[in-house]
Image (cartoon, rainbow, N blue to C red; front, side):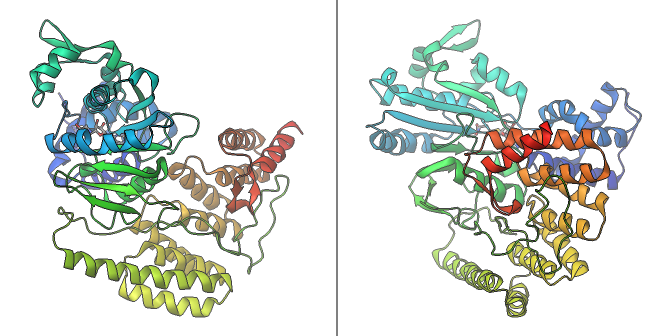
Length: 508
Ligand SMILES: C[S@@+](CC[C@H](N)C(=O)[O-])C[C@H]1O[C@@H](n2cnc3c(N)ncnc32)[C@H](O)[C@@H]1O
């Protein structure tokens, strides 16, 4: 019998932690079930209190427990050919177009993100089987990805009950499934077309060049964003953009995104659904490297250099966040046009600010930023640039304040933590620097520079074991990068040169 209760402040902390870890926004109407899940885990693990459970989830030993908690927290509802309109759009228009486009290479790459127990990717596989007569000679990748390990295991088995067939014609059921005692086993030919991977959309790196998760022709992500926080959506959309081929399509559930989320895409309106096509080029808000660097940093692994006051700015990509989430994608063209104009205005001004940064005209840049932030006080990019600017001017306390504001606006963006780490180090606050770097890694697990800087800090403290571990982690990430990749935060050193330096440091 569970008698514990969860205080409202601890409940808020859980809500925040879940959002950070999974992207899922626990809304007030779901506080009760979240509390029940927490208390049941506390009881199961024989822990002394919900606070102890929170601490377990918070630290690195909690990884396995997250798997269990996530299974309780996610909604797994799915069925075959869910949403007839979207599936007819796929069958009649989108897939035939992709097939034509790839006829020469005979390859097709599709990802179902948040695939739950597999009904969605298998529905796509069945469509492809029907649309491509010589399917066996094609190189088809259909990936089902989801955070929930148990759902994926079920998906691999491909056995479903009748509830999964509520929108399926009898004919499909008899052709592709074998009924065994009221359960339906999908046939092997379709089954082997789909591969499942456990991926946490909120935290994991995408694209992943070391797996199939890259260069997709189509990503379907339906009934997932409805559970996500605003900043998690923005974060995942950018990953999807980078995981699609140019001109590839993103299909979400109806009205799950606003125009603001998908600025980098070309929205295509069909009567059955809107779909988003990746434009060629970079994600709309990717930020070119700044001419200066807060730290041409301590990637020299032996010594940590003291930073010169004028020698700053972190150069990273910046993603803006949009605060409001409309439930209606295209309500009125006029309203959208007005919105578009105002959002373009802040972008134009921000581009000017970045130009001023390049010429080190900080005072002019500050004036422009103040103007932008007066009009768009919740603009993440403007807030972040203000932090960067204050750091450049050596106004560390102000810079920290702006960093914290930026974090409030987008808790998923690691860039403000880069600045905080640099300021802390500059001020001789090694603990603060380590804490901020760990946040960077938490938010961006492949942040090579954060590992290298942490290694330096540990080395400085004489903790060679930890320094070593950080260097090994950096090396592992470097192995996944093309050798000519420039690591901006480490003074544009190439991945190859950094690898050599780290290897030398480890062997010496
Ligand atoms: C309601 S189901 C949608 C299934 C399917 N797309 C459909 O529309 O039928 C939502 C799925 O999103 C998954 N999900 C939630 N958060 C996720 C995350 N951070 N990363 C990956 N998958 C996530 C859940 O585990 C769940 O399987």
